[in-house]
Length: 186
Image 1 (tube, rainbow, N blue to C red):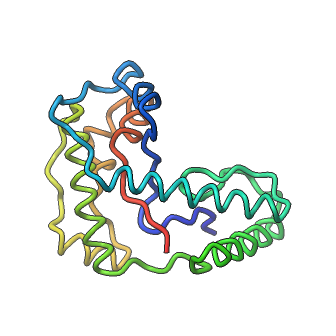
Image 2 (image 1 turned 45 degrees about the vertical axis):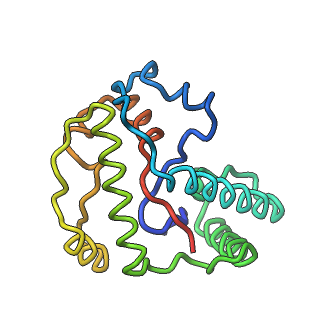
Image 3 (image 1 turned 180 degrees about the horizontal axis):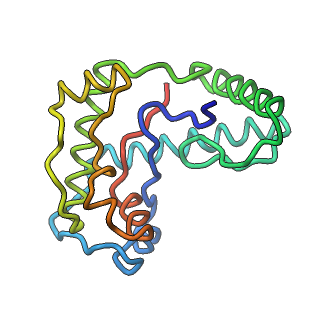
């Protein structure tokens, strides 16, 4: 059963403040960045929306008596003791989503949202390349990617590129902070 509430892909929060960006710099083991890379505006906008959603869901679940930590995607990693506890959590999570103005469960992405996500994945790829990852071109065109996403087939994703996958986990984690993937809630 899915506990995380992210729509299309699980994303990671970008470093939100200048001090945090310094913490995500190549000194943590990631490749060095190209001096010409500038985050597209959606990165900061998404980080703010993601944090607002996370904080709201955390506060609501706290109010329902849960002693868990909501992660940056709106999911939880805490183990549940049994299926009854999980079912109670899912019901509370859905009630919280509704109280926050979202649908109880994330509906499938629209074609327009998928187009936006594909474009943002291209930005993520460009960011990874600018940070020194030698990646292959996308394996699907936008239309092929959208068709695959609508049928739950395998879709291209820059984090699935063999060059990214070959990096040590600490470098992958640092790059995921610097080069976030699309995230949304509806």
